[in-house]
Amino acid sequence: MPLTPRSHTRPAPVQSAPAAPPDSDALRRRTGSPQGTASSQSTGSSPRKGFRRRKAVALLASAVSVCLLAASAPAEPLGVGDRLFPYLGNPGYDVASYDLSFTYAGDNSKPLAAVTTIDAWTTTELDRINLDFAHGDVQAVEVDGRPAAFSSAGEDLVVTPDRSLPRGSWMRITVRHTSDPVSADDRDGGWVRTTDGLAMANQADVAHLVFPCNDHPSDKAMFTIRVTAPDGWTAVANGLPTDVDRAGRTTTWTYRTQHPMATELAQVSIGRSTVLRRSGPHGLPVRDVVPTQDRAALEPWLKKTPAQIAWMEDRVGPYPFETYGILMAAADTGFELETQTLSLFEKDLFTEPAYPKWYVESIMVHELSHQWFGDSVSPRTWSDLWLNEGHATWYEALYAEAKAGRTLDVRMKAAYGASDRWRAAGGPPAAPKPPKPPKPGQKISIFRPNVYDGAALVLYALRQEIGPKAFETLERAWVQRHRDGTATTADFVRLASAVSGRDLGGFLHDWLYAEKTPAMPGHPDWKAVAPAAVPVK
Image (cartoon, rainbow, N blue to C red; front, side, top):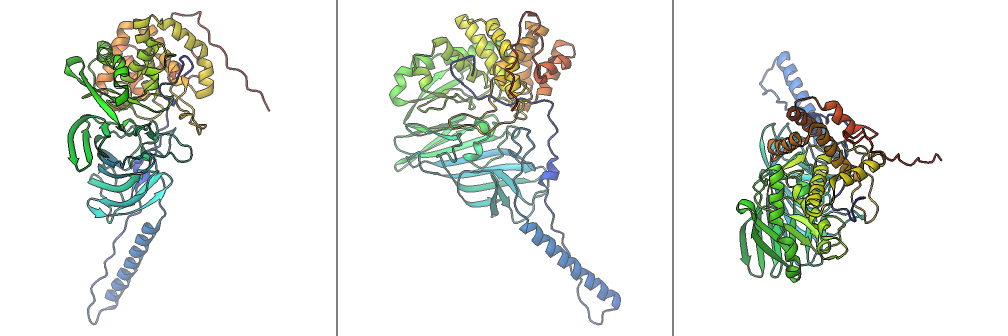
């Protein structure tokens, strides 16, 4: 991140007015299997009866032919039409819940045995079910308790049940598979191998490298996560613990969420860890996961969390989930991540003396604020990610101003100067350029400065335009109205207009979608530096 010494979350795509996603029914529907029935034979049949018999035989042959064609048609990858990740997610069903079971044998270079169970509603008739899954071996699949055929297509697992599923039906898909923690083809994400075990970093498009899923934030669901590990390891996941079962030399931990969650926000920590517990505002259970040997050194940082939650609640309203905490991973990731109820941090962020105290605390608030902006209110498409990262950067900057005197105006003026360059490189905040394959050791390229400080600059301009009081009302209304759901850029523009009492569509369109940064209200002296010209070859 250009204005701070490190990148603490990945930049996200921005989007101009997005095209409507392809019709789900058209994408998901497969050729049906018409049924023909031969007429019963009778002795001494008339020519008319013979005609009916021949017609019936022809219909039956036609039906069999269509069935064979449908069964033999090659599987193909599908998607929900996201402009930036066209093959993420799958149309045709709406996931209600995931039940994930992982068995860890004590070696983070070996695949985990896993079972994923998905409960979902069909939204159209389905002859096939596409799941996103690309980095594990599938041993068996069942649909509603019956064995189902399966094959792969691109990064999809394509399941063919033994009968078609009508629209509006409840289905349960069970996949027995492995989950490989070793990255393939230099592709980072999914499992993160730590010095003592594993953690997860699924944003934006790699949850399906860990478990079969509908890997798009538009389809949030409830999660139950079970982890079995040998004695000496501790497992923690999103949500609250419900069971701890010990059998022989292993322990199984079970966690459940109380609010829906996007697949990209799933978290599982397996390590030689200690879980530290404390209370937050209103008795909120706060639990942190740290390497046991670093417990004492990290405690001074961890005890700051309850006050940071209270600080955020004073600005945007009640904390939206059942628990919160920090997972300090002994790993070199180059980023921090807002996994729901248990944010992922590199341990070195807290132990490296080069990072100023105010900076580390502001990054803690950045990930905390995502629990409201990005986790509770999730982006409908990845082009809406500026709503996540812009808000998290905004509250990070406000916290640094309040606690360390790092003036917001100074930071926003610097961002304004760079904004035209950011827009040229990555697109405007709500119309990001599509991702490019990351270079080795580099995180996904949709997470660029245009959706961090570039998007916070949009919020600054909006506050300048409508005033602090209306802006604070908007922020509270936004997280309350869309709690536990998904929302779009257009939703934000409509709510801002309603709260302010005037149409802000034109004003925000230029800030969100224009190639050049508009003039900043109240600061006519602020100037953007033009992007360097690209030489013509």
